[in-house]
Image 1 (cartoon, rainbow, N blue to C red):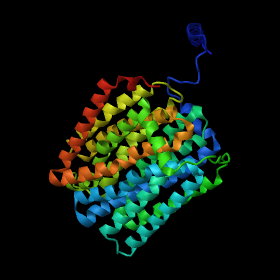
Image 2 (image 1 turned 45 degrees about the vertical axis):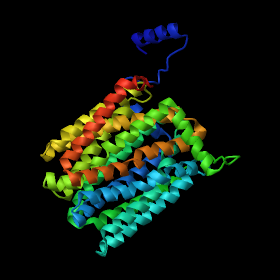
Image 3 (image 1 turned 60 degrees about the horizontal axis):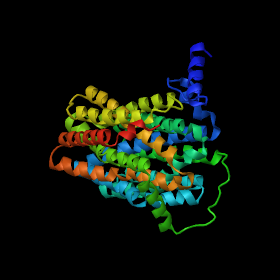
Length: 431
């Protein structure tokens, strides 16, 4: 150890009476970025989910373009987004209760198999040229039901895969995995859609679920400890909600996630219309727009992961909360694909910095016995608000224009970030 570092530790020890945690890094490190992968169960989870998520983003991109191709309606894009997210809004809290009452691996196996079946059904309808807009609404709604139970289990499952000190890094790597898929999946989907049609995108997604199903089956987990005394479902729901409302830090973090998803994610529903009407492109253009946002998020996730066990989470959250809406506003004024891609990379970076820090801080502060229920509230704010944003943006774009709607979303998000900065200053001090 260098003399300068020894003196720093001696000084802190003299001031505090305890040695500092030298594992907490303040500089990026490649080894720190991937520390969670040293755990076998997490390696299985990471590789299985990465393959599955690429397929999921291929299907998401293909559905959006297929909807616009069939209806030529910005409003209908909003309807499909609303149908996918409505069950999340209504059922995610029940999913959180289920996540606390049964083995999370079992619950995930059920939801992943259900979503695989839906992907194959959609592929069948498309290959035989019988798919209709209402089919897409029903498939989206059923997928939302599965996701309502999948999301709380997935969010809280990470605690079973790594020790507590690596949770922040594992969450960052989860984001890296998610956004690697987002960076690759839509671009591949756009090219595949243009060359072979949407059916093959849906088929690839169905097959990709096998990766995560196999990974889950291979994990060696601690035996599930059953809850000795079960309360009624309603009582458990109320307990979880009361905990979130009464906890100052968790409550405001979940509000930040909710607002960010209503106005900061709803605009993405309009990407198919933006690709065709504003940039005069096709499915490949849509794929590039989706992937550029994912690439920006991937950069943010890797940056966060590289810091390992670090303290300044609130400060990074605050930076992301301003970077995100500023780049959305800049994107709303662009009409050139290359510039649009750059703006979405910036927006993706800001959104991931905000979201990742909110997730890490909630996971840090929540009590273990309530983790599933609290993460279900978090998941509801993360995905349950998206249908509201989708419906709002689709309807507003139909009444005004796509560009006006995107600018409106960026402006509202910027106002909210400013309000948090001045009225809730403790957020930027969170560790």
